[in-house]
Image: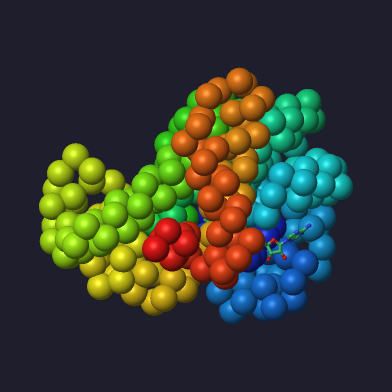
Length: 291
Ligand code: NAD
């Protein structure tokens, strides 16, 4: 079992650090929030007073922070100086591809290995240890990170070199955003055409219109499996996080000249949704704006 530094114990990181502790690791944990530190202590982690103390002596350093600017500053201000030579840096935050590549290069220049390892799956999957990790980095860095990631998730996939994990994550979530909007539109049109929505679900979920947004995350209350729609769109995957991922996808598309008109329209629709009632709702609640 290893000594692991875990920085960023929020909605996702709290459950992930707890699962590493449950697997028997010595988890030293740090967050700017005292409440988050307290929760980590109750979950079997050792709360630390600073990021530098957390990182000191760790074999693996996991970060789960809000955005690229947080990761870059935590790495530059603490991790690069305090990490043991040979430590593996594992950033699980969702950040932009360029920042992920930049921090990996800076780590390599200091003799440290690094992977970007963003996740698919929300707070419930982080708590249950059933996340999917998409990992960017060299084969050697992937092999070193994989056992730790397996303790926090059910699937760990090597996507390619540095930044490839983030690239896979934003491509996946751009697809999800566009697909959710299209699924909502189909239900709204079906309703206006007088179709029974359960009957439409029964047909579309076994036909060519089938998708994860339809069969696993149906945006209509009372139809399909239990989803945030059944709780008036509370909980689940917050619309502002979907907007964050769509903005990252649009920035990445612009940087490489990719043509992504559906992603761009989904980003516009989520901008409007989050500026209004969507700020506190699950992303499938966008159906309310289409009705
Ligand atoms: P969160 O805001 O709940 O947690 C972030 C934590 O980082 C907070 O506790 C904050 O205090 C801490 N933090 C910020 N700056 C820090 C610093 N300098 N030092 C130490 N701690 C610091 O966010 P979250 O929902 O846990 O998401 C984390 C990441 O995971 C984001 O990049 C998000 O896009 C991604 N993600 C979230 C979900 C989800 O459903 N919530 C799903 C997939 C991916």
